Image (cartoon, rainbow, N blue to C red; front, side, top):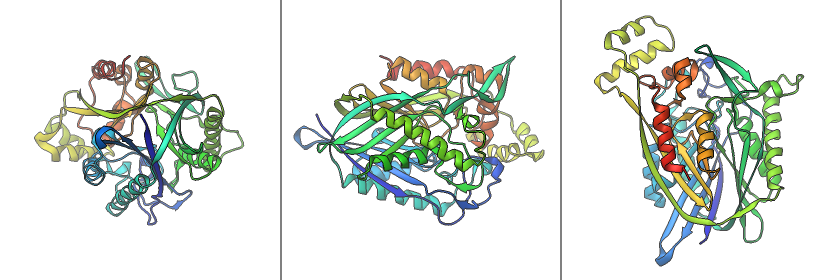
Length: 429
């Protein structure tokens, strides 16, 4: 059994100032400048079968916060029509950089309002990248390796029923940096995929940037040479931030820190590539979709929403107005959509259309014996998926964030048991 891989990289930098997504402090103002170009990278996979049958899959990673849930169905339909790609085998992923434009129209204005012109441009660039990647497929071998990187840090501490923010080096995080390498029959690198869990939030300023994730990817491409591609897949980093205080004390400029952490990541990834990586054989290229309804706590009444709207306090007032506009259609649950894509023996990815905390990412790795990578920020976005303890303690992830995501309510504590049970079914050994 063989697999063929094609790659493409396209520039998706907005040339006209548009709002950037991810930080309410920017006030939805158009960006002030461009510190680095941002890109969309695509890996197209093709597997010839018996009788002329062909299986295909697509991995896309862009220097963006995510892909908007309202736009994904239309994009999947186009990809199916033009290339026969099934939705179960498509990964539209954002590195979760907070320094790129918004991609969907279903979020609070202060999370960064989407610009229709840019969204159309981005989606055209996606199709351009897929066409280019599909045109240069060739047979590859697959290698896998893993190392360690400590540029991420737990950003929450829970005590006495409360959540506290900050950097907590002794807190839970996932130091594993995993790498997949695709090599041509001539022995050259076609592409690598790197996987790590850390929020790209080094810089808060209102400038376009590919953040440390993009810096690392470009550095790896420079080191690999010969047009090889580096695709960054973000892990379950909902409560993991960049460990900014670990940078040299004299390094106070955020963009110097972006380069610093990007280079540290690239050094760790290079160490994996230069180590004894394991060859893995392709398996039947196939995907499977799962939908997991996650219930919400009792919703506010019409009168309660009107009272919240009347106080005119951001972000709650605009959220309340939006909820009032939904009327009786306001959902009492949100659906977590997951795709499992099997690529090689002992290697699969599990996408999630949510911002998932590290506890679930570590659980996926544990029950799959490391054979499944958790890849949130894919194929849409419903909001944070926290743990039971986080919901009980409150704080940004389970509570304040829900207003920016225009969630109709807050999650029930039972979602942890529901999700872990579903993960046991999907990825458990």
